[in-house]
Image 1 (spheres, rainbow, N blue to C red):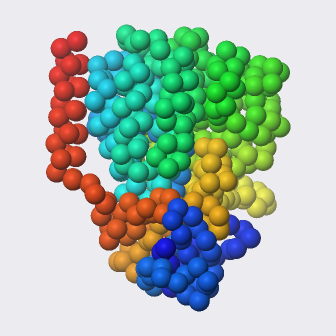
Image 2 (cartoon, helix red, strand yellow):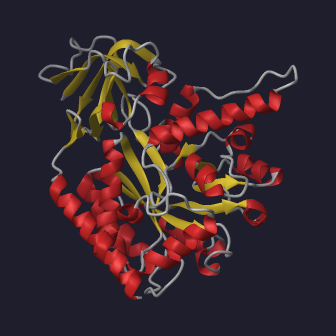
Length: 445
């Protein structure tokens, strides 16, 4: 039992609201109660009390799309010019030389980095599954870090591979679905169209049938422009759109495609820095388009080879871009700009992210009965003091250094500002050796 006591509690549960001074009671992997003073709660007897005075207690962040295997090559192409340059340098360049061990090292590094920055749930869009061993290694990395990990499995775009996907998904589900105390779940991953890597990886009736037979949600990447818009309308006409489908990026789509998505209740994952920095289609995160049809999106990191690793950056980027567009559109008129708020983007980064990953009943808010995935964030550090608005501080003021405690399913993964049980020297050695081996293999190819 743990009682987080005395802090400002941001629950992201509209039925509970925020508490200027409150407590969160955790028993094993669950949140038992949230309230202003729970020391006398019947189940609080014997609980370890964690004093959170001067701190913010909030839900953990949820990453809805990250290609975790690439992490040891992070920021190797920081000024990438466009999607084509990323595809050729990473998916056609380094991906084919990855061993199963490289998959493990990259995915573990990404997951630990996520935990350090307060991301308690991460969907790993693992699109370098060259062999069954590559998939096993990626999932084992999620298990070993203790993150709430969603392994979305897809075959690679280029190079030689065993062609075991999607057939191997049945084995993966039998071996890993719900393992590690329920922390590991699986989804099917696919591309929107056949433009990049051919028809085998493109979502359609065959892959939808695989997902349906295995009772898996589906995450679809590279949802861009006119071709993806046409695909979405085909899916709508054949009953392939629904709440178990996540469309990633969704930039440059037609209004007809958006209406079909809204009508079907699909979920959307936006990658604010990816759309803007890599220049995906319009280069503008499709937040206004999503909200216009009733879709509240989740947020994602995408590719660390070119982008930041944390959710704070995603929230701030989306907040700034949308508000800039809203004010710019109204400039010179008497129209009132329709701006999103800091609470909106925190909602996207927590509650809506969980829903997007198919885990809305499990995590994403500090709601009694949900899993105890939470953060304790210092609000009296030099960059966060004094605390005037907790949500504003989380979105605009805080960063990874202010996160003192990270809890996943009741297990403390970061304590006193340090990851628990992680040998950083050994991690550095493994990451560096893996990176150097990949570079050498590419050079010798």
